[in-house]
Image (cartoon, rainbow, N blue to C red):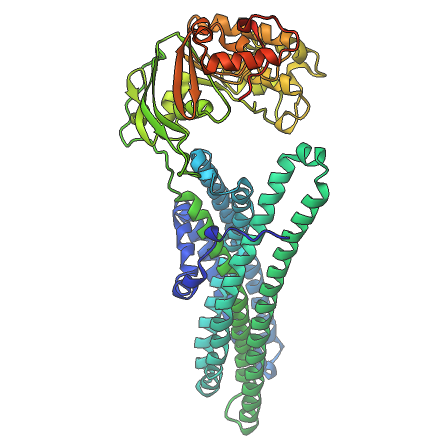
Length: 614
């Protein structure tokens, strides 16, 4: 069954009527992006006015040719020569308008895409708890494509048709006030269906965009976890789910297309019927001598221009509404309030941090589940170059400590300091340069192995990359790849094993050369030999760096200067490995469980290396 798009991400139907008169004006939010290219826009507008003026002058030339047909061939030759010159000017003006408007559209949309990405890439994880990645990608791609269509085509066409409509009406009145008055009687019959059906079309357009975004979100989620989907033979359900959403999107689009088609039929029929009636009256006036044949031909041409312009405007109106909806959705991203913000006047970080960390009465609740406290009154200090391990059952709050230290979230109470300065007083990009993270789920990007390691410090040399890889016990397997360090490792590192990805993540953190190293289950996917090599490298780094280690494996934490034992979001014990085992508390119990799972491991719990279990 198709999952309906999150109502929180859609326009409130109750507000649709109130917002109806303002919807298209939301395109005004594009002005800041258009402003830097005012000269290009002005040139495009000049070309547009020029071509519209030439088009409006053509019927006058036609009238003169028709009424002066009997005046001789020389005059006709001049008329047709002038017509050729006018056609050349019209072609040049149209080409210039197309080039300028299309280039302007591409430039503005590129800037919008960049601005949206620049904004969302810096938003804290709280934002991504409410919005799927696929939804954001849909806005950056589908919605910007709609805006490109408007800036690069629809607005230009709308302005041209508006000029043709107004200019044509004025020249129709100059040609025949009587016939123009009859034409104007048709206008209300055209405006009413545009307003009534256009309002309905606006709601349907937004709903259709939401379904498209939902399908993009589901596809992104399934494809990013394709191995899990296939491992659990969940392909049929994934196909059915995506098919359901895609069909719902099609059904929504079908209703929107039907509404727009109905509006087009009504408007064009009313206009055509009116033109036929006016022509009938005009033909009678020619017969009675009230107007010349040339005047009637001129009026007919202007009538066709006005009718075509009105019909085009009715179609473009729907495009403008869809683009206005897309602008609103992109505007929501650009204006999104981040729960974690930098201060207006940040305190600068020291040139080289010492790595002193302090948690002072920190409490925290995740925004997605505010009813459950993840941390309660947590206080501890880490001295420069000290190694502190965080252990405890799953869900005890260990990884949350890492996330708070990186300021992915702000604590609900208390404060966290680095070198004595509250994290909230500093710019995140500033103090994060003093931190290096090896996450529990290592992230490997779709690039070469070398560039994945260099991600930790983009300016690093190839030699420095290799040194970091050797320290992380990654050099041997990287050298054995088809192109060595330059081998493309695939999206999310699909060409690598879990342990290989983990070693690349460790090499990346080592290369960063930060004063504080954060290891969140950094060796959980390594074999014993690789783990010993990495442990040796970590011990070497620990002599000059502050380290926080989240781990379940005693081999990883037993040499730490201190171990903090977490349970239920609180620190329940603190000490060295030997001290905690001797106290016979939670840590000792976890050690015995590890020993029980050791299947022949050494009898002393201090040397256990199996995974601790809650």
